[in-house]
Image (cartoon, rainbow, N blue to C red; front, side, top):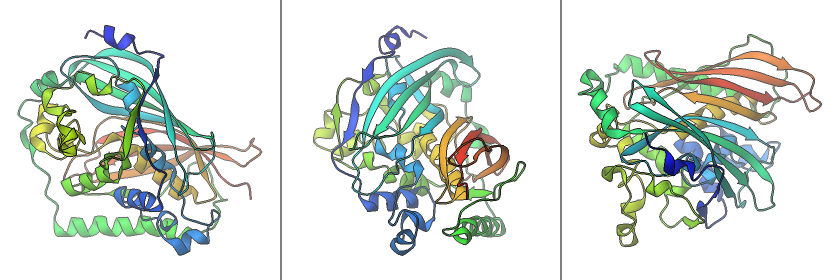
Length: 380
């Protein structure tokens, strides 16, 4: 893999998409809906008014919705012909200010580093990391995201994958199994509804967090996720400064038509035409090494942040999360998130910092993501 063009972008401040408008409360509501997170703190006026915030605020996961490209664009720099990308992980550092309706955020970006390895999935594969710093209109740093992009030769991945066999077809769920997973969802949702506005004070090492089920996933659910990202709204963004993401060597079927989008915006919006069409159209998924339609890495990260924040409650705060993604969610599959308290640091003036180890799996126990997060809980 020739990475000489990538080297030119290392450590260089990057441009890219920025938003024209401030955040609207319905952007937050749409996000909660798209992420399948029915926590009333993020969409119900009366409940949010009684919270410590006094109004609807954005979940911490919403931060990734305050940039263009899921925070992955700084990790996709430099031309490498015939490549595609998948998310390999996200590391987050959160500073404290919560995102509220009326805020206007801007992104600062930079390619951090990369390494090339041979993988069973696609042969020569680049693992590149890029940083996105999120800054509000007051100059406050909301947080920083270090996203890992897996760049690989699409043709090689499709060749290795072959005909994919039974993996081409969605698994079939019985009515009984579907009813069971709906019951599991309600059991999970009740955990944060029952907590309400209370503080989480009693925690011990070895404590397990409740299981969060999501799915079974469908083309409709993946499309709803995509359209909850404000960047996908026609005309919502503008480009500022230099970035090579759109000219990174995408195969023709996954490239945007930048001239055509001046007449028809769908030619450049990513889902109808561009690098995200494989998420909802199996024929394009197979071109880049996936057996069928699949979900978004940024959404996997959002699911995990929502899971952690829902457990912590409105008085808690996720200060750091480092998650590695080992495989995407596919249509027909369900996703399950589990966590365990593996450490508690009481030597912090603002309250105990709890370490939670997280695992995300499919219904077949296939590992999709894992990592650790640190959560600040109230002292009293």
